[in-house]
Image (cartoon, rainbow, N blue to C red; front, side):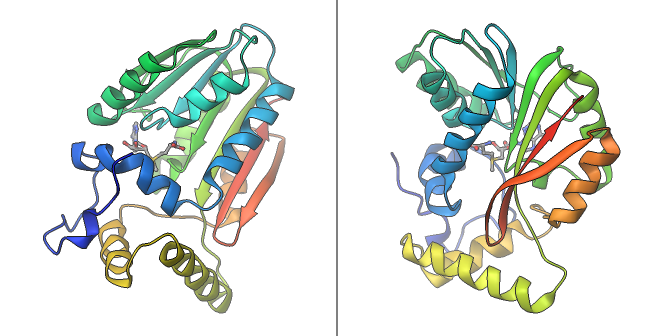
Length: 241
Ligand SMILES: C[S@@+](CC[C@H](N)C(=O)[O-])C[C@H]1O[C@@H](n2cnc3c(N)ncnc32)[C@H](O)[C@@H]1O
């Protein structure tokens, strides 16, 4: 796995994009930047085990290099799930296809290059949106989630993981500090952390737990709960009746 040293460089792009340079180091970047990344995938596998049946279709929207799908496919061998990963970064999709070729399993896996906010989706049992809704423009988040609700079959599930904010300023500050401490413990320097934070300003726009829950309820989901939280990261489960 290539180590993420992008923000060691003072010439690193001032606006964060999912380009080929990022795709190259992305697996390392995610593991060192998303607390409990693998535990969340593990929980998603358990949820899919409960809420999907053999032969159903599952989308991973904003699938990046395919880590989640490949791990789910390994965990759910024998379920004959049809996994489809979509991402609008061609470099991420190229990497996902390469990784899938090396790890062929029993489930069908496809990766497509496309914009998840506009691409046509087929009726499915589950959609996963891990750490991706935060990159969709706030103005279109409601209509996007409503479309996902409509795409899900009855009994379908939407699983979302996000960085979150808190409207209580003291708690928000404390949780951001804990997160920066986590990144330092993962080997990032204070300068790297500060540069990446500046590059993500106005690109990664987090909502609170309540704001995300309201979006899901307004989209039509009657059952919405968080199933995981680590300070300023949370995962949501939304069920369609
Ligand atoms: C933080 S990464 C997601 C990580 C991935 N879900 C995982 O858990 O390993 C966000 C991904 O969303 C993709 N993305 C952002 N906006 C998108 C859009 N409108 N359509 C498709 N993909 C998008 C980016 O290219 C990037 O790969």
